[in-house]
Amino acid sequence: MVTDGTSLWHFMAAWSEIFRSGGQSVSRPPVFKRWVLDGYDPIINLPYNHQDQFIERFENQTFKERFFSFSSTAISKLKATANSECNTRKISSLQAVIALLWRCITRARCLPHDCEITCSLMFSTRARLNPPLSDGYFGNPVHIVGGKATVGDLLAHGLGWAAFRLHEAVINHDDKAIKEEVESWIKCPVIYKRIHLFGANLVRAASSPRFDMYGCEFGLGKALAVRSGCTNKCDGKITMHPGREGGGSMDVEVCLLPEYMKNIQSDQELMSYLMID
Image 1 (tube, rainbow, N blue to C red):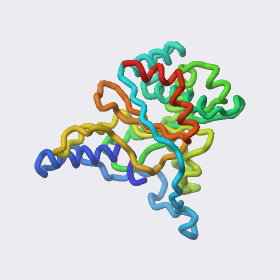
Image 2: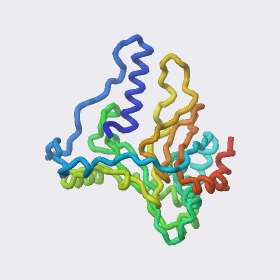
Image 3: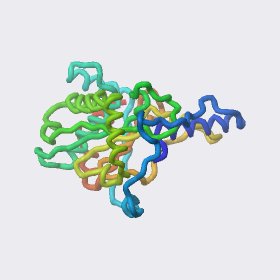
């Protein structure tokens, strides 16, 4: 909770640079000056009387993890399809990939068609604040936004329809929305637990294929693969990583209950894109 992915990989890059330069200073030092909403004390008193009110003990859950690799060609086709269906050029590659997985995971869960589902994604607020924060800001300035739809609507419409829901959620979360959300939290602070972040009708995307995960060198050569630990995972969590070969490829870690993972591995829409080289 101390840092987001941007700060984590900034730290890893700096550490690697120190190793490669023989201990010299880093070329892009982190920025530790705190951003505070105007008019508010940076010291927040949490409304808890006992640690059990905010500490959540780890519970081992049974779910399956699998990585799906999308080539740059497949991603280009996904992005082109999503934008063509919406007659726009605004949908990003990341939004197109997440939209595809939102549809496929929903299909794998076999939920009722009138059930409402949400696909949420975390993104850095650095560039969206006015004035913007530095890329080197060391902290955790991320917010969660999401697109909502019923199962029936999501599966009846195409990829572009789903991707545009995500696109709208992102662009609407501007400087005003960010500051209003921060102010709301300051007035009623809470420590979020897993129960707030995950749910049976939720798909949540995190991390980013833009992070330079394979650029960190510590004398062992280029990493063979990127993997993550057991925290912050639950049914419906997808974690985005860059593909090892670069060029816009992506590796996506998907966590699902065993029965859902079995279903998604035979999803024709998903497999049709995974087979594109």
